[in-house]
Image (tube, rainbow, N blue to C red; front, side):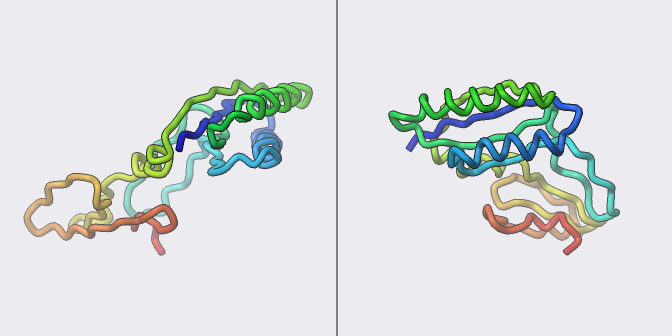
Length: 153
């Protein structure tokens, strides 16, 4: 099945408010897999290394099945997003057609091999990695609902 990926890049003096309002629009039209892609740097907690790059822009992303009515629904979403300009939120929507398999596996692109200590490395199953002598490699298949081994817990 195909999906339409709707990415709403935005600028606003109040990022939190913009995030809430755009998500509300997405959820009110039953978009699935909604993700808030906001570049918020996290403090280094001294565990492992940062492996997830920060996005370049503020964006909310959602998915809609590519059915006969999806173009009409997207037009309605774009109209609602345009009204957010009254609140100082400038939204630039982008539409992309994606295959369900691509959508289901896209999260894998963001997980990389992570060095935890001088001898321990956590490696997702799908990433190639050549270990050094004496190195301990933890192979992990995080799945979509499990962690990657890079968080202290």
